[in-house]
Image (cartoon, rainbow, N blue to C red; front, side, top):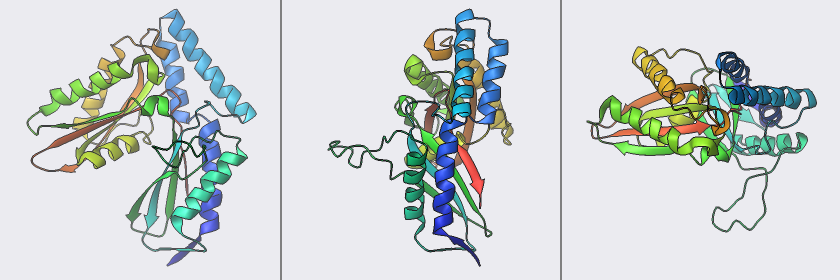
Length: 280
């Protein structure tokens, strides 16, 4: 049994919160450069260049990539042979979020009661998802999710006979409705299967997969390629002002589901798709 101390989890989460908010993910950076090279619309090219300049300035000066520093999501793969000492896991994570957001001078956007909304904003708690796995490792991934794009995410319970075309129709409809309000170019996470809650979680987790990493499932790889082509054919473009680049990538995750249903969820990320991860 391996021992991992709560204080080390707190320290790691704090560092990941800062890193995710000030450094654009390498795969997103490359996707923006690629989009800039392919774009023919002058206004779209100007916007893509501005996004890359913003990322460079943020990293150089250790400033937030966006004023909305997001609702912090923390995904954990916890080996079953790990013993956490010196505190409990969730408290350690939330302490790390608070420390990281303060250290990085990041905006505190969390309100503790969704209806009262009168207690002032704070830094935590975050949304924590834990997967118990084999081994003695701890993998931590922090994904601060801005709500301009989160507000445009959607889920639907399709009939089991709906088929592929209805899934495509729903994803495209969700992107159209997001439009300029979700700050394109987007990265689209799609979750298919499970129940209502699982589909939504899969869609969020899909955003952690690097853009351009081919799906191991050939059926899903073809669907991702098709969706990306159709989405970029909408002409919404960077910041909704037209162009070839409405989406930088589409990632799909699936899960077994019930014979009587076909849950589908779409989680939209703006061009600032932020996450950082570390293995303890």
